[in-house]
Length: 276
Image (cartoon, rainbow, N blue to C red; front, side, top):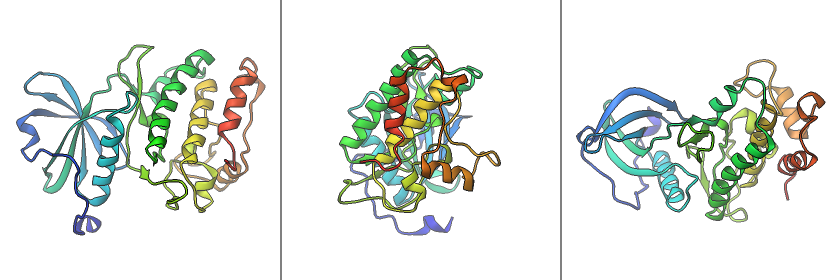
């Protein structure tokens, strides 16, 4: 916990609530998910009975930057999970930030795909899903924000319906800055989705999100990722890193024979090793 003992210098540019969150919400022990920076719980409004999601972060400059970027990004975009309120209070004896967000009943895109067994989405359905992701990412990039952790687990459906809206969440790796003025060097990533320039430990920019979208589109259409490790699936193996850096992936006939050349070309444009 030593890293959280530093003085906090980042100030919230919006009002926060200082009362106990339990005054306003019933907090259950039901964990909806675990992000890179904290757990997300199911909560219920004492006033309306409506269900929401609660993310709890230990208070720090890093956590505050995450919340500020997320709140800034979600205000004018329907494809980013909304933040309703931010509390500053104690939680488990630690100064914490408690973020009340809209409840995404439909769950993760990851779970939707795994429930389909070995089959991918049709091109029409995949196009609808990727279009919503593109809307969210384009909005972020127009604000000079790179998400840097686009993956199936961070894309949530609002409802359980097949045609539900899909929204982007978890801004724990997000970074703000113009491509020319502030290239990124910190290697923040999830192995399956990481762009080659990120693991090459060179400067990179918002284009890393485009690569991740290409990986997601590939998975949508065939059911598995273009790059993977045959050993520990949670780590980036040397062989997997080599293939990512070389852009070495295949469109095997068995899975891709019925997929159009246009769809494959779109993936190839996204999975460019040296983006312009």
